[in-house]
Structure formats: C-alpha cells, structure tokens
Image 1 (cartoon, rainbow over the protein chains, first blue to last red):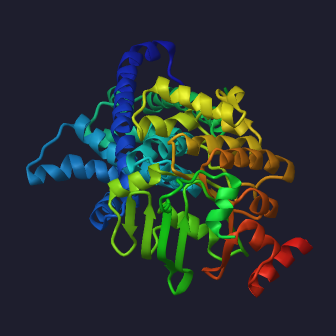
Image 2: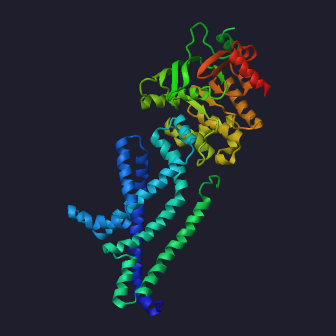
Image 3: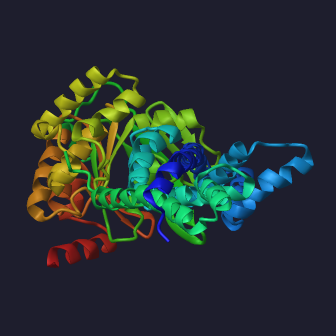
Length: 220
Length: 268
C-alpha cells in the first residue's frame, strides 16, 4: 500500500515538478484573481447601472459555474470560436475568474462591514472618492477580508488538481502518470496527497493565526 | 438686544462701520425622505465668529440640517451659501464645488469616526496631504500644533483605539481643524461620552469659540448653549421654532414649544 523509499525517490522529482506547476497556477490565479475580485466588488457597488450589470454577470457566472466547467469551457470550448489557449494559460484564466468571482463577494461584504461613519468622515475632511477608498475604506476592508481571502487561496490551491482534466502536468496528473506507468495508483496518489497537505495544513494554521490578529489595530 | 449687539458684547470680531455679511446663509433649505419632511424650508444666517447652538427634541431635523450644510446629505430644495460658495439644491452639485465646500467646513461627529487603522498623527495629517497638497513634513508639523492645542501631542504615535472617548473626540476636532475651515460643525459631540469626558471636549470647544471660530453646534448640553454660544436656535419637526441671543432664549423663551422643551430638559 505505502510507496517504498525507492519508489518515492524515483517519483519525487516528477511529483515535485507537478507541485511546482500547481503552485505557479495558484500564485498566478490569486495574483490576477484577487485584484480582479476587488474590481468586481467595486463594480457591483458602483452607481452606474451598466458597470453593475457587467460586474454582476461576471461574478454570477464565475461563482455559478463549477471551476471544472470553467476550465473545460475555456480549454475545449473557446477553440471552437478560434481562440486556442495552452493548458497552463487556460488553467490560470479559469481559476483567476473563479477567484475573482468569489473574492469579490468576500471583499464586497468586508467593505460593507465598515461602519458608515468612516466613509462620512472621509468625505467630510474633503477626500475624493478614490482617496476615501484608498486610504480609509480599503485598508480596513481588506484587513477584515484577509482571513477569508487566505482561506480561499487554500481552496484554489487544491482546486488546481482539476487541471489534470485539461492535460496540465500538475501534481495530480503526475501522480496519475506514475500510476499508469507502474500500476501503483494508490501509493502515487497518496504521495501526492501528502504533498498537498504539506502546503495546505501550514497554510491553514497561518490563516487561523491571521484571523486572531485581524481586527485589532492597537498592536503597535 | 439684537443678535449683533450680543456678538459685539461678547467681543466677537466685527468690522465696524460696514454692514457685516453672514458667513453662512441658508435659503428655504429642505430635505425629504420619501414623503417624510425632515427639513421644512429652513432660513438661517450665521455671522463670522458666531457660535450657534441648535437644540431641540430628537427627530427635529437638527443633525440633518448640519449634514445638509456640508452636503454629507444633499438637501433637495433651497440654497446653501458659505462664504463665496453657493449651491442650489435643485441642481446636482459639481465635484469641485463640493470639494471647495467641504474644505471650508470642518465636521465633528457624535461617534468621533476616527480612522482606527492610522495613528493619531496620520488621522490629522491625511487630508492636509491629500486635499491641501501639503508635504508630509509640513502636514505633520501642523498636526502636532493642532494636537498640542487640544492637549494630546503625546498621543500622536498611538492608535485611536488606545485613547479614551474624550481624547478621541478632541483628536477628531484637531482633524477637522487641519483643513483650516471657515466654520466648524459639531453633531452632538459629547452625547457618546460620560459627563466627565464630555467636559474636556467642551473645554476645547469653548477655547475654539474664544478664538473667533464660527461654530454650529447641535447639542443637548444646555450649559454650553447658554454660556458659550452667542445664539441659540430651537428646532422641532424640521422647522425653526425660535432663535435669538442665547441668554434670551434659554432664560426667557417666547414660544410655547421652546418652553415645553426646556422644562423637560430641566426636569430631568
């Protein structure tokens, strides 16, 4: 059942390169997706009807469709319209969209949780809308959002495993590949699972640490 | 005794020999929420250096009036004039007009509304940098002066959460003064404070009044209305019931509604 040491040392380079791709997809999806989520949140809160509708559409599709469907749609569906993407690019686009849609709701709720008086005070001291957002509302809102954003980041990291369906050589597809070459599916997937956990569990501990600290300003 | 005489008697700055122009002028200012009339055609003039206390029962429109003056809530009828800026509530206000208006009006809130994620110093400096375009160094210098003035220079590097309510409100006053406004609005500045902490805020406000700052203060502090303000105005149901020199209104009210309100306050 368990992989032997020889097997592990033979598989590890492949598995680690798969893990590296999983982490790259995660990092890029978050790097693109969270700022996108911020824009979507502002779009949903915007006064302009058109902005609001476009933002709501992107959010609802991004949240409504399972990540697997978004992946397949972008990788297999878009080429029929003439747009062909590599599996890495397709994976990042799909997961960034997914991230943007979910984090926009996290960020929107966090911004709305800030007491109304904060915005009023910002307006009363003459700040324009952008400055009020930049100096007063976002720093407080993002602090509230941080634990939830980090928790979501762990989900996206695990979600990269779906990318094996579009032939991205990430961690799960590497484990499958090893399995199909050696018929040692269970040990290979077990090794992959341990690698996922080695990232996810420390990250979850970090989240709960951040959660305890968030919200208290008078630390310094 | 007319209002002007009262001002002169108190030593408020006045330019003798020439007709003094009000700093703030409201014409038929009105505000509705749906069918509910919150402000019902308010006409009001406030002279430079005048301290006006607005008192009256809850829901009378006092706070809304204050918030309409700096367009925190846009009025839906009438005119607001402050110094050289005049806004017609019937037309949508332009951004640059609003920005000029807010630059000349400082506001202090009941719940302080300091920015909890910034140090006290940053709270006071932020608008100087972003709105007045001062350098960080100049802004911080000015902020330290203002913090000293409210007796809190030693709190500059603290976060507001570490300060008492009275200290927070004094910081909020310094923050509002940082734009060198022509007029300061106070929306029940001591209502969220226990009496002792309220006193330190009132002391700062009294000092500010003595420097000749034009102030409009919505308050339930009758002693402030009687002893510090030049003029007292009673509001009920979105209307001005009575307005006059503070001593007259507080000791010898003419209107039945005013008498009833003051009696209720004194009987507490």
